[in-house]
Image (cartoon, rainbow, N blue to C red; front, top):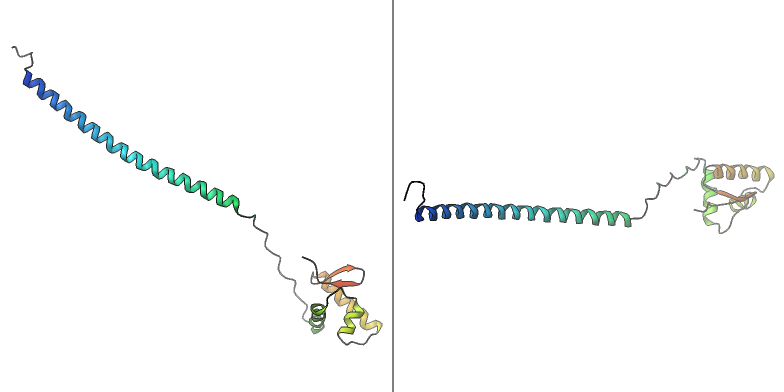
Amino acid sequence: MTGDQLTLGAVLARLEEREREITAQAEATREQIAQLTARLDELGRAAEEVRITRKTLLELPDPQPPAPPAPKLPDHPAYQQIMAVFAAAEAPLRARQVCEAMDLEIAPNTINNTRLKLKRLVERGILAETEQGLFTHPQP
């Protein structure tokens, strides 16, 4: 045999070395596959969480606009008395009926003053005038 020719032992040694290289590459590839599979599982869970979140948000009712602040009652005690009369009333009232309920003198001037107070309460949104001279709590 010449130097250019390989002996059977040298061929077997090269084959063994090549087998080790292939085995090492296969093991490295398996490791990469395991890492990529784990990453794929993570991404699948994250996508599922996003789908669940989207579904949950779509099922939520539309938010209601914030309620406007409650109208402020004037400080004068007559307004508290008027509101007490309406709290006890079961039907809309006229200015004269409010005067009677407050035990005020039934005189044109007293009724007109009470009507003016009722109109102020309507302007503030505290009461509603359902028809000319007929007052009640506003309907929601």
